[in-house]
Amino acid sequence: MDQLAKINEQIDLSEAMKSLGQLDERQLKGLMKMLKTKRKKGQSDLPPITGDFYNLDLKLTQEQRKLQMEVRNFMEDEVRPLVNDHWNRAKFPHEIIEKFKKLNITGVPYQGYGCPNLPFLMEGIIAQEIARVDVSISTFFGVHSGLAMGSIYLCGSEEQKQEWLPKMQKLDAIGAFGLTEPNVGSGVAGGLETTCRFDGENWILNGQKKWIGNATFADVIIIWARDEVSNQVKGFLVRKGNPGFKAEKMEDKMALRIVQNAIITLTDCRVPESDRLQKADSFKDTAKVLRMTRAGVAWQAVGCARGAYESALKYTRKREQFGRPIASYQLIQNHLVEMVSNLTAMQTLVFRLSEMQDADLLTDEHASLAKVFCSMRTRDVVSRAREVMGGNGILLEYDVARFVADAEAIYSYEGTKEINSLIVGRAITGYSAFVS
Image 1 (cartoon, rainbow, N blue to C red):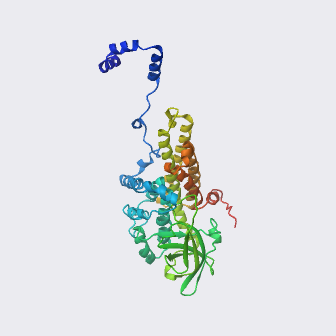
Image 2: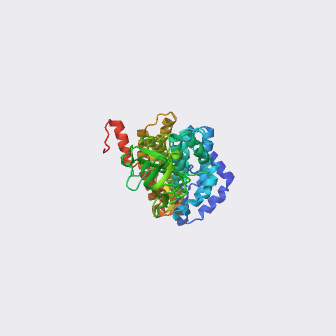
């Protein structure tokens, strides 16, 4: 009765009944069909689009959450509008470097030298937020802040740290990291072809490096080379313009097209002893850098997957077929649930990984497991994102096509799936399956 009284207040029931009586059978059937049809949900009625299904953001402090949102807003406002165009043209948007400076997020976990000295967890969160919009920009940032600065921080002398880290932290100097070679990828530990020899005054470097991100415009490039005398791996700070150093941009990539990868040729490249990384005497020292940054790559994979999932979810709620959003259909929902399941598993794994890193418990196998799992699951997420979008999934304007391509690069760099699997396999079985 209360419901009837409320209706009576809003409409004239007697007039409504009179009008109903004048409808013919066809009109009455149409009216009943309309009344039985559920009201379509408006956008305001739908849950928010977020890839954080388990609310892991709630584990962050207020200050950490604030920094996360600053990075997210920066990526949405400054980077998202330009990435598809630059990705398509394989150009790097150099103008964003000045804007990046204001965030003060470079060298996050390092102590001193102007670095923020925040937990490794925040380095991961930042990597995720950048990759959530574009993996290329995340790679640029990871190479500079992680691999290049990390090499100097872990393996450099105090003088080298003082010279480079403060200006690299401010992005006044850009770094690159040269380890991979044309003939040697994952086997660099025992097969580095780039050589170095000391002539009593300078180190002479000869060889080539490949896939070196940022190298076309970097101010300093960390070059790893095998000592012809001791056969040990050493690291060098090679400055832009150093005689005997040449960087040529790699063309025709299908992934990470914004990243300016280069082939580096070293021809009797003379480097003074003062520019040799003083605490890098074997590949074990190189591995320290890789262990630290491999965790960041796992976070990067999570960001790529999250960006693809959120883009796909948004699309399926707007795209209609047969008069309904495709998100309301069973098969589409199944894909979305598979995606968010993978994403949530990845997020919880890397969150724990960073907790272990902050507690100084991180090992090679911990980082390798995260890299293997997250890069594999990211491939699955971006594939399903592309699938639910149909033909539009291959168009740059919907972003997912870029995530699909860039996921392939994440899958390979910082150690292939096979190499990282063998690192984990050695740890759990006690047997090394590496070919010696």
